[in-house]
Image (cartoon, rainbow, N blue to C red):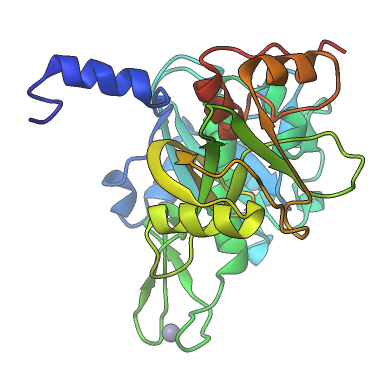
Length: 328
Ligand SMILES: [Zn+2]
């Protein structure tokens, strides 16, 4: 029986997995195929644009800064390969932009090419982590999408088969080689991120870096070619903390394009009660009961991942509720 046939089964699944965060943008995978659609949007005078340079976006105190796409493109005109326009989609709900607004991404190699005329003085360049706490859901989704696609363009400028510079098509979502006509699509690197639960129900968290660091988080690692997600979970947990995972379950995912990851969240169980950190990626590992974890966070003994991350969602999924943070 599938969950479409059984509301009870669907409800059970909803309780056991992480909630789905709805898309904020219609990416228009059909409309972006039309040749010249980005030029048409720029010329329409109705599109908005955000600007990214060197992994930073222009932001204001309110969130992402969006300029008038046609005015901004004129300010960038004549910069040649300094700038590229990519179609991000149209907004699906009311947010910092009205519903149905077409949003473009302009990427510039050198922030100075924008000059000061096209950008208000209160806008500044900031990376995602610096401003994530003050972005609404729409701005967060656009910053994530913009980071993912601009990182790919920045590192995939030439054909991997023959080395010829490639041309941008499909609103920025395809690059094509003019010599051998091969098409190249944006890539995403899958990584698993896991809560490991021991035989007594305690949670295993780990950390790397300085011995005096207090941060503990879920364990994670990249999926290797030819490997299933489940195999990656078993291998990574075995490598990092010497614990054998006997079963795992997928709970949800989060795009983390810094530079190109898709985090696939799992919870896994083990019969092992002793963790042995590899001393390289993981230098400390510790089992926590729910009471121990909440107390260690509140008394400042440890820190755990912020609410922006799927790591926090996975930990709170195991916890069964919200973990209170130590207030600064
Ligand atoms: Zn080629």
